[in-house]
Length: 60
Image (cartoon, rainbow, N blue to C red; front, top):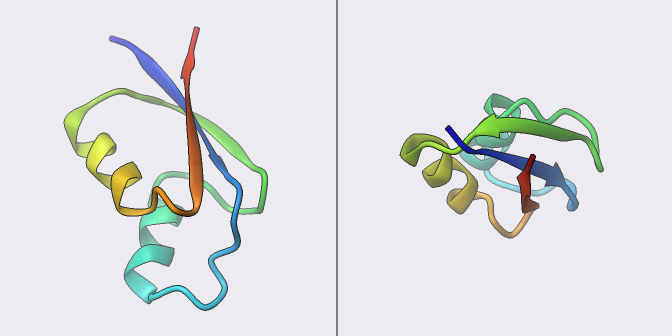
């Protein structure tokens, strides 16, 4: 299955608790941290919910 690289590019300060929890559950802790995750519909939805805080790239 394909993977995608998600990077936190904007702070979660001032965001709603639900958005903060989504960022944490993606595995992102600090600003500019990155994780490689499987490209599944569930994770796509989580990324879409916080798309204003993260960037997404295809991972090899």
